[in-house]
Length: 189
Length: 312
Image 1: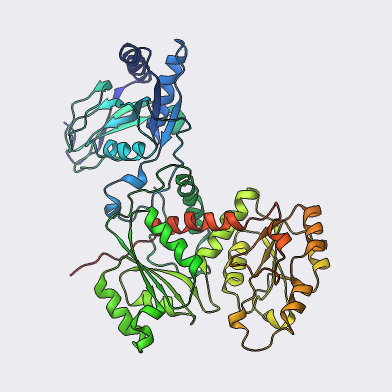
Image 2: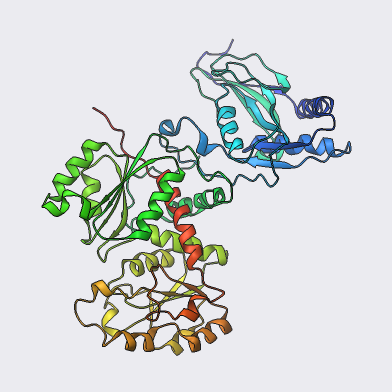
């Protein structure tokens, strides 16, 4: 065992593992959505990348779903607890009508569920989808509110001093999912 | 996440770093996009209170701040001079004491005396937003002007803006020219000699006539409002004379069109004084855009400032 005060990083999904998880998500979307009118909405930053990757796979199978983007900064429930951090806002862009559409929200990791709670509020200010579902690359457990994903790339057992770091080539210049163990940590990004 | 330090108050433009200016102007863009949605409101400041404290009449700025705060779900209270004890002789510090007890999170203040927002800021935990103090500053106006200019000129550095009118009495001229200068935009001024201050703003090019302005080739002309209420002394002979010398009329509009220059004005407009009815319809007028951007910029400022935590 290493020193318990050390920060350790373990790769839990390789680039090939991510590709596999993405294609699993794509398969599930096809199986469950049938001929429904579907649109994807990615949560900034990596949820957007994930949504585009799944959409890309589906496009190669003849299904063209639009991808919108959502910045949930203005909907968070911890505005007072941001400390010294000053969030830089992104432009949410949902360039299609949500009314009557089956919307699938994408985020890279689901942890407490609070980000998704905020995203649901944000999404509903754009219209009234017929249905909203949630797709994530990683479900790491430890929900604080009753929100569960409908599509999961990979479930990972974690404790509260773990931090799950998803890195995509497009956003980070490297690819992989890492489990970081910190001596004391209780927040996700 | 950035390296920027949180800031409690916005009192002037001079004390802002370029990084802070960029931060606010960039965050204002997503706020403006909210206006395209059917639901224009976000819950960010739910449960927070904004106090609009206006010692000077102002419909536009006051309602712009009110709309901005409402769109962020804050509760807004409007204090106007005639409806408050200020006319009953309550001193500024007593007023501050009262405000402190109300536990407002943000105080938007306009006062005819320069420096009052700064004094209030020192004595309250709330974030103070200067909405215009005397001849000193009007920082949110400058930020909305910069946002508007940058929208039409993404390559804004090195561009030219001519400010026309009463520079001496104008906090708008002061704040906006300072901000434009910080952003690398060249600023020139035209106005009655008596209304151009000496020794201040050395970076500005001075013009004596419109011909000189047009020969300089401005990318935008920024007309200031003639402040009838501030003309205590006689700074120019008459309104008609001012209009003839400095107003935007048809002939000058022809030159504007040739140059492709945009027209800006902080409002409210005195038609027939600094601008004719015809010029108000100019296709490259940015006046309405300035109003819209004012709301977005004020939302970005409310989002940026951090009141001190209210304890006890």
